[in-house]
Image (tube, rainbow, N blue to C red; front, side, top):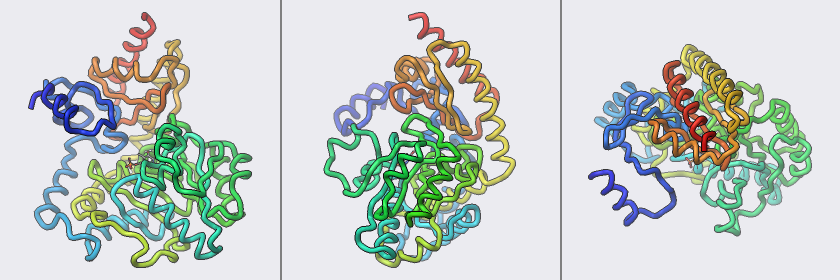
Length: 399
Ligand SMILES: *Cc1c(COP(=O)(O)O)cnc(C)c1O
C-alpha cells in the first residue's frame, strides 16, 4: 500500500479514536524510524516509553524466534517456564513477593485495584473499598482504571464510573490526609506523572503517603507503568525515592514492544488472592515473557542504568541551555529519560514542526512537549534532537 492508501483505508475502516500525523512508519533501526517514503525520524517517543532498547534489537528478535519455534501460547491453565523466569526476575529485583501478569497498563491498574479491594474487605469488612487517586493522574481507560484517572474529558462521557474513588491534590500531603479515611483501601499514585504533564512527586510527599497508608490501614499502589524499567535512571522510580509501595504496576517497556503488564505485590496482599479471583487468557504469553526476560536482564545491568543516568544528565543540561535561550520554553522537568518541556505555545506546534524535521516527539497535556527516547540513546542523538528543537524554537518565535 502507498501512504495515501493507508490513510484512506484507515479513515474508512478504523474507528476514529486517534488523530495521527500523515506519515506511515514502516521500519526501525536503533533510535531511528523510517516511513514508507524512506524518510528518517529520530525517535524520541519510543512507542510511548515502550521500546526501551530501541528498534530491531537483536536479543529481542532472537528471543521471539527461539520461543515461537517452540510454543507461542498455551494459556494460564498450564505451567509456563518463561512466565516463572520473568516472575522470579521481577521479585528478586524489587520489593515484591509475588507477580500477576496481564496484557497492558490499564489491566495492571485494574488488577491492582481489584486486589486492593479484596484485601480491604478481607481484613476490614465491606466498607473498606474506597480509593484515593490524584489530580492529573493517568491510570488507564477501562472502567476501574478510568475511575482513578483525573482528566474530565476521558471520564465524563462514560459516567457513572466505579463508586468510591476520590482525588487529592498531587504533591499536597495535607490534601491526601483529608482524603484518606478509615474506609480507604488504597492510595494510587504515579511517582512521576507521565501523561499528566511530566510532574515529579516530591520525596516527602511519597514518604508522607507511605506513613499515611500505614497509619490508616490502606495499601500504597505505585503506578510505574511509565516510570518503571529504567526510565528514570533506576530500575524502578520508587528505588530512587527510597519509598516502598505495597503494590506496583508495570507495563510499557516491560515487553520490549510486545504487550504485557504486571502487578507486583508483597505477600500481605498476595495472601488474600486465590484461584479464580482474577485471570486472563493471553497474559504471560510465552513469547512475550521470553522477550521480557531479555529486556529485563539488559536493563537491570548496572552498567546499563549508569549509562541511562549519564545520557539523561547530558540531555537535561542541553535542554536547560535551550530553555534559557528560548522565550517560548518556560521550564524543563525530567526524571531520567522522561522529560517534559513546558511551552508558552501549544505543545502540538512543536510536535508538528518536529515531524517535518525528522524528529518524533509528543505531548503530555496541552502545554508540555514530552520526550521519552529509547534508553539506548547516545550523545550524538541528544545533539541531533536538541539541535532540531532549537530550530523549531526559532521558527515558532519568528511567527
Ligand atoms: C500508559 C499508562 C497507563 C495505561 O497503560 P496502557 O498500556 O495504555 O493501558 C497507565 N498508567 C500510566 C502511568 C501510564 O503511563
